[in-house]
Image (cartoon, rainbow, N blue to C red; front, side):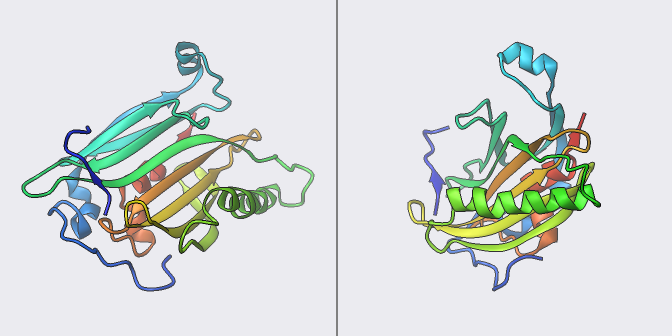
Length: 230
């Protein structure tokens, strides 16, 4: 189980992973309750962000990150690896419990050609995005992890993007003894090849995601549901 030291600050083909240890009351099934989420912090990535941080932002976008009691949001702008922003969500220590790692999310760029010459450009872009996720992203980052498997690669609608493509997979993190879910979503921009990829990882030992509804009810799921290009 991944515990954060106190000094430092649809889907499943088989049964959902059981929680291997007791968790605070705010986790488990309670984590999905919409009433536990309050106001959101808004992050805008555009020319102003590019000028302030001296980086190129190939496509303007906005994220709304919900807050909830008992969950700490750790935000990193321009983390290593070329991403624009990264978020880590951990539970605050309470009672006899330390801090649990819950989920993380990063936004980075992706290029999906417009394919205007195709008879159905939107579906052609979906096929390209699906191939990138399965053959490039998964193969390079997770295919060799213990117990790694892809659960689905599919087209979905997210926020203002009707032809998003997501890959969902799972693996075992031997270092922390955690069962993990990976969700990688390519969000094709409607008017240009330059697009975005959202990568989230969820600790299934404390957040029992079992289908599309519970996935959408996670913190990262709520962020993606509200995603918008500007």
